[in-house]
Image (cartoon, rainbow, N blue to C red):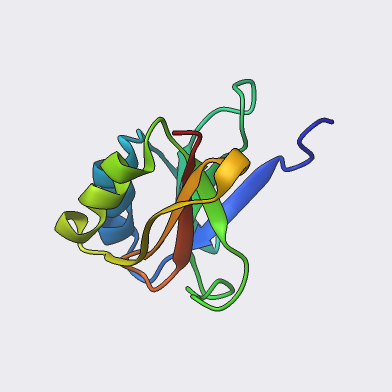
Length: 121
């Protein structure tokens, strides 16, 4: 089964603060893109495995902890979960075993978005 997710946008109130959080937790690199009505920091590349996406600041996008949860893949959830609070976020579900599906954690980023972290070990 192919992954149909092509792009995602994570809403921000403070674009620079959000970039710092995601860079510290996931070691992401970003490219600034300025659109007529918004600014965004893109990460990932469509030709790589997984979906490309961005952090976006726009009047049409509002951070939210009660809707869709974007999961970030990593080698060991414990590593990224340990970085969340030192990067300004809040860990709300620590590394949790989900049996044959691996492990996950949930955090609130600096903007108020709920995100997931997943690994197989």
